[in-house]
Length: 639
Picture 1: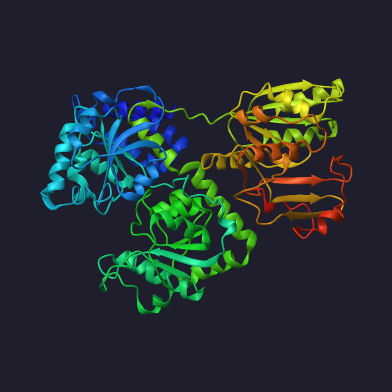
Picture 2: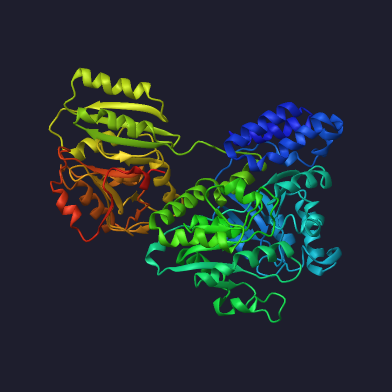
């Protein structure tokens, strides 16, 4: 488990066993991302080849301070925290933990009566809707709110661990250091500052915890229902005091003019010229909108521009980059180490407006290029950079066990076509989702064919942990066969996969993502790619019917929550069992979500034996069909 690995690595460092610590941090890097542990590894090398071991061991230990952070076993439910957070952070973290905002006037009683797991403070400017303004930032911490904060910290010390997250590093390291010095655990958005905190706050545990996207808020749901605009920039213009940021903005913002885009000026309601955009951009300026509304803008624009105030940190970048990508919006950014470390090949990098214009023109004019860019960013954030991922870092640092094993997915396939053995084995074995089992129902297979099937499943390397082969040569319907197979599943999800269609490597991984941001009983695909083998054409059906709640998804793409399927099951039908089940789900208000169209192609062969007996002409003449290629070109959806 990652929690155990982090603890072992930290213990090895404290004890001066730097070689072991390096090995453990490398293992964690391979599992969770090298950008989070690079500083730890570098520091181990420094200690190994330089400083005195005893001094190094003392650097991360302080008698008695860590006693409350020993291994606590499994967490019972969600984390609970008394907290002082700024508005956006509070909105994002509340989906991952129960936050009890600390009352400015009644904090002593609140601390005494609290049963929370920890006290969570961040580098606030206002804090808890302004009630703690200046508490973290007043010079010398002289303000009344700052004095109250220091008193709060004294009251917390012997009650629960104190966690401080500096989201303003590295620019405001010194400003927030006096509060950080009181923390048991320090999180920083800039991994370059880990070493400084270890030096300046002996006794604290220090980790890099970058920004993220809150998937419950930032996701692509309904973006394709919105009218779209071209290019957008949202933020402030700093004419004074941020020379590097100004240089980047002056280099990139001309693209707003060239593509008739929009600028949402964060300082639009502030008088004066300090933050005023240059005259040429004034026709494109729109008023700032609150965080609760900005997500709609993320989805409305085809492309967003980003500049980087910090360019030399491998972890620190604008929170907006994660949020945009999670919404499926391609980002064009000036270069930075963090962009390269976390989103290489995903965020489009441009040094100036000339380079940006080439990228933007391609994104706006090439539909498939835009869709691929959109999907790759969405996938990367949803699988690595959400607040649920960051919450795990907090749980591990607090000493709780974190289960790294992804939920088990039970694949069910029913087949009576031995000629599809290779297709079945290929589809199943190439899934990169790491925790699957297969329940395979066969009918009419000879002993030789059964041996061929089982042998190929055994010898192909795959992520299938368990295979159950059911031979059913009865007259039972397809629905009954599937229902019987479902009685053997052990997974949290059930994926129905047909025997003749194409399911590419990222199919299952991508299909599970929507369950993380919506209360869906069934996820499937409405917009789909289909190969007509007789006509030798790849088509796309129902373009635009993706990332939305729907009334229909293709049966070959059904992915259920297991408890939902077991409640409803299929009726005893050989045809129409999929539609019947959907109708019953809709009647009971179970939400159905149409995911992306990728990593799946329906195969319509002349001898495919489909229960839906229609000709290729039916699909080619449909008003919701788009011909994509005159051959089986999998590059459109296999990525």
